[in-house]
Amino acid sequence: MALATDESVHELPEMTPMGTPLDWSWLRGTRAEWGMNPVPSRRGLTMMDIATGTYGEVLEEPPYRSMAPRGADIDEDTPDMGYILNHKSQVWADNVVELYEEAVARQWSSTRDIPWNELQELPSDIEHAMCQLCTVLTEIEMIATDLPAKWMWRMNHHFVEAKMFLATQIMDEARHADVFRKRALANGGGLLLAGSGDESLLRSILEAKTYTQASALLHLLGEGFILDVFRQGELIAPTHVEKKIFRLSMQDEARHVAYGTMHIRQAIAGDPDVADEIHEALDHGEQFLIEFGTSPVLSSALAMLLGGGSEHIEDKGFPMQSLLATKIFTSYLARCERAGLNRIDRTDLPLELLGIDIDAFDRTGV
Image 1 (cartoon, one colour):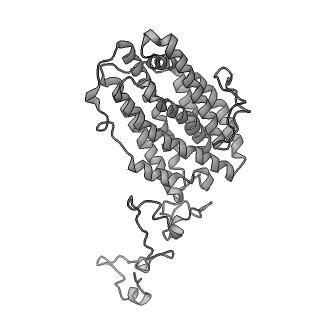
Image 2: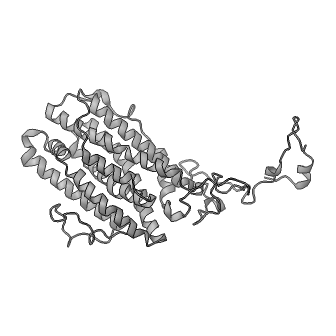
Image 3: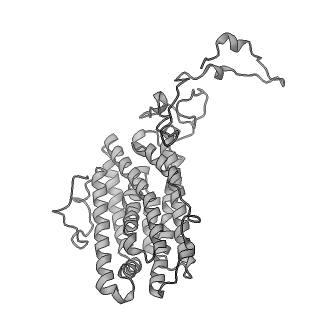
């Protein structure tokens, strides 16, 4: 595609009919790659397809702190937006572009995609347990909307794909709060008890001093915990309706955890000193996680669901709930290893009480 020449631009009028000066410099195209034609993939035109040439170059330290799109010619008089997260390792993850495309392709509706009309009356103890679990999940899911929202506007717009992904995470978590609130009410039950331990964990995440600390607390600790609960949905869910809720929610949480794990790994690679501040945050966060994960309310509700009712809560429910706790904390420690954090030698978690065999623990992070 031909660009306008200086001569052809000079032939154009210099003023609007109202006498306002005109600027035709945009007709010359950008200084970068005007005329570059990205090729759509089988899925359509993805963010990966358009990440060509300088448009795909994500700088370690961008020279501007504006909302101008990466690859545009930026006016030198463009105002500074005051971003504080201006280094790539502070927000980026190499999987974030693919995760964004997956997120927009796999959006689902709690209104349309859950077969609410197929809910059947459940025994009172099972319905109470399901409603209690949904109360807890409704309470904690919104932290993963509030936390990204708190930090997104502080991120340099040069890292736009990371901000776009976090926007999908906000939508995902709003939908989770929506679906679990609906489930608590949809079968004749209701919202039950919200505990202080839940609030302590959420507050520790929201009040993290840096985004990297916040991401570690949210993605490695909090969302990782919930992801492992969802993974046990086949055992926890009393009907196929709840199974579908857990399955759809799980695919969302898996994306969030994948971003957070890669982000922490790259943050540490970019600045090894960051590991100390993350360890400090997790030292405190783990104590709240223990309080939350072993709370009598949540533990008994899960045991009731896992055991299939009060009749088998002691011989089946609590043993299965104990195994679930072991899986959850083992999975958390393994995520930390994948993120480049050795928590096994530092954690104050009661590993033996949780049934975690230190000698058999996989330290490779694979």
